[in-house]
Image: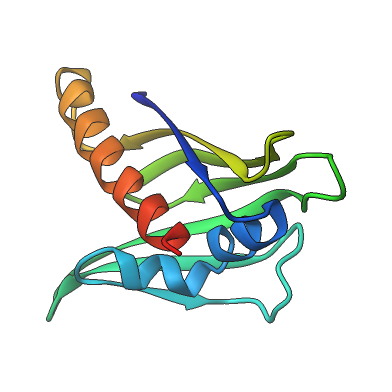
Length: 145
């Protein structure tokens, strides 16, 4: 299962970075041909479920996810959210950590392991490179000031 790690720094305070990064519907707007469908009502909590649906016309695939850890940042303490992917095609997990910096601003750490069912391990480097590029762009766009 290919692993992805992204570190991004922003001048935003941790609570605002957290709010932007955990606005699941905004994630879909940052990925071409994707929209987020919420299955549970806000606010986000352990057990929140949503699906990222990607595709055009009748050619689509779903990436259903569930929040299994939900710890918003508080004071100087980092925030952490962990999502588990429950899809037929995309499996794995993602973890978002938002850490306030003593010098001001916030450091975001995004870690993810994913597997695309039907693709062998030979495709892991390609999947990891594409996912790293995609998620780095999503993080940067969500945190753009």
